[in-house]
Image 1 (cartoon, rainbow, N blue to C red):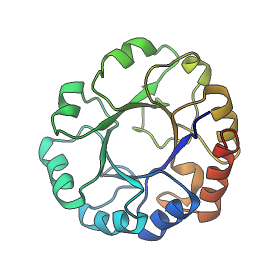
Image 2: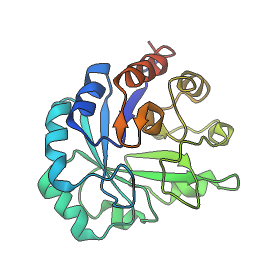
Image 3: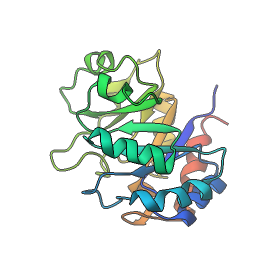
Image 4: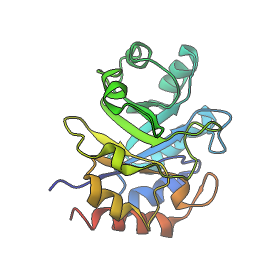
Length: 208
C-alpha cells in the first residue's frame, strides 16, 4: 500500500507552515481569494513557502480569479502547484503552464464521472463539500460513498476532515491524498500544531 499524501491548506503564518512540515505534511496550501477568512496577501506568501522548506509542495489556491491575479502570484510566490476551487474550466486552469488541481464540490446529485471528464488535464481532482455560501472551508463532510470505486487518477479527499475521522476516510476510500484546513485550526487561518500532528498520525496509521 502506498502512503497517503497530506496537504494542510489555508496556511497564513510561517510558523504554521513549519509545524505542518515538521509533522510530515507533503504540501501546504495558501488561499489567494479575498472573501476567505484564510486569505493571504501575495506579499506575505514567500515567507510561508520558505518556512515549509524545499521538499514540501507549495500550492496556490484560487477561486474564479482573473489571469492577472494568477500571474502575479506565480511571479511573486513561485508555487509548485495551482489549485482552482471555483467554476474555472480546464482550458483556463491549464493556460498557465503549471500543474493544477481542480476542486469538485460534491452535491448529492453530482455526476462524478462527468465532473472528472471535464478536467482531463488536471494533475489531480480534489473532492470537497458543496455549499451555497462558500467555496470550500465549510468544515462539513459529504457522503464518501459517492466516491466508492473510483480509480485511475489521483483522488484527493477534502471537506470536514479532522484528526477524529481522517483515519476512517482513508480506510474506506484509499485516496491518493487528503486535504485539511479547519479541522486542524484553533481559529480560522490559525493552525494548531498539536491537531496537525494528530491529523498526520491518524491519516498514516492506515497506510504505514
